[in-house]
Picture 1 (cartoon, rainbow, N blue to C red):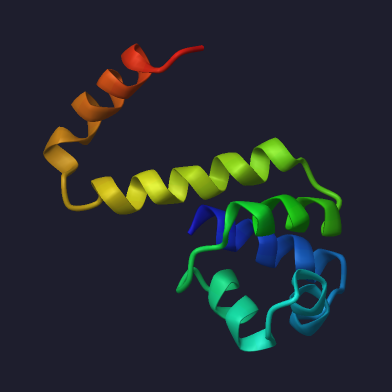
Picture 2: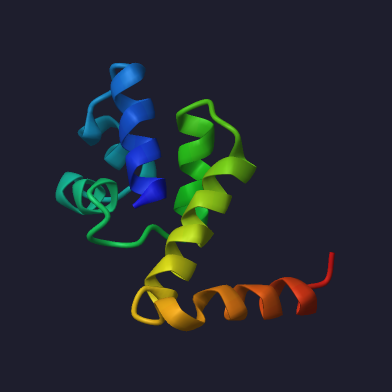
Length: 94
């Protein structure tokens, strides 16, 4: 829930309401709330929009969003997670 925690913290710091961000994303408030609680994944386009709305670094938010996806996939594979990540790094183009 790295991404969810970050957007929640930024929203609170900026004294914004969930309904304000939901409206800007053109989704309903309960759906936004689920994204912020980590119960529903945000779409990539929503992550980019949130970076702009929350005046934060887009790359950082996208990194946290992708990290959450990787964590979800590897969560039940703790013994292999390190080896998998090594392979990913070795085979990812820079």
